[in-house]
Amino acid sequence: MKIAEISANWGRGGPGGVMKDLYSVFTAQGDECLVCYGRGTVPADVNGYRIGSAADNIFHGVRARLFDAAGFGSKRATEALVRKLDAYEPDAIHLHNLLGYYLNVDVLFRYLKTAGIPVVWTLHDCWAFTGHCINFEQAGCERWAEGCFDCPLKNAYPESLCADRSRQNFERKRELFTGVPGMTLVTPSRWLKDAAERSFLREYPIRVIPNGIDTNVFRYRESDLRARYGLEGKTILLAVAGVWNRMKGLYLVNELAELLHDEYRIVLIGDTGKQPVSEKILHLGRTENVTGLVEWYSAADMLINPTFGDNFPTVNLEALCCGTPVVTNATGGSPEAAGNAAGRVVTSKTAEEFAEKIAECRNEHYDRAFIRRNGERYDKAACAASYSELLRKEENPWHC
Image (tube, rainbow, N blue to C red; front, top):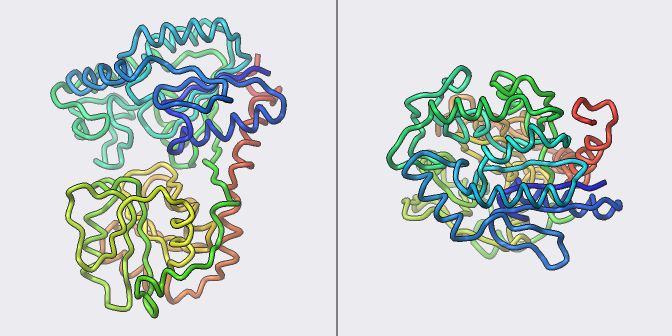
């Protein structure tokens, strides 16, 4: 079987990581796979195709910021991709993250509607059915259910500095993304599946396949972190994000640090830019050291995830696989891996309730071995196997 995978990058973040894992699984079982990506590079032994160039990414990004046109640049680059797909003749096409200033969805979907090739599209956020934003929960907005306008998240990624074309973008997406013969949607969370079923994408079958993680890497690991950082006797609350911003809830972490008693210590990992961080927080900055991150997950008493807009956060899964309970906001699919069996959910999204749930969690005396088993359900091998099964299931409605 020949499969073409399309995403913004290779191996980075949720979409890129899933594409990388699937490439390994498909090729190991004898399938042929082509990965088409918009940014970065792939290893020499990977059958890859770069869509456009770095200069094209920049031009598309500038156009998006000026004219609210994310996803509608890179026309020539996408026409070249279509020619590549025609020459490759895949048996199936798997779409991931189409946002990232590298692809023209108009060109791509007009091709998909006539190519006669089964398509799976994994939605990693809400952008496919909104006029602009990647997560409507940030603004508590429901306009996307009928038709976007006056977008309250115009200045959030994908940022538009000038125009607000959310109404036009919504109508263009509805026209392009509906009516694709034989397309199936996949979402990593039940929350996103429910949202997609309320959108103009409701015509397609939708299956939930959580993003997987490497449970051989993310597992309990002993360390001397408590002694090294003077945290003996403290209840360690770990907060992790690649980049901390308002959506990730940095301000709530700061508020929480001021509320908690001295027996608690918040350890913050991630890039905060120029944003202030409370002096009561141990801020370690951003890390690419996975082993060190696993040690912090293992040393922590809890992971706190104050997100205000997420689909199915990987950090929750990583913590669970290390035996660490999760306290998270009731946002998107974030509570789906936690709940009382492996943590607590904060419904009001306030620092005061966070402090209450942390205290409850501290008194729970969780069985960390049980939590680890709960996290291991999200092993990346199981994720890849589900996609492989989906591609081969004869009764699947998108199978020709």
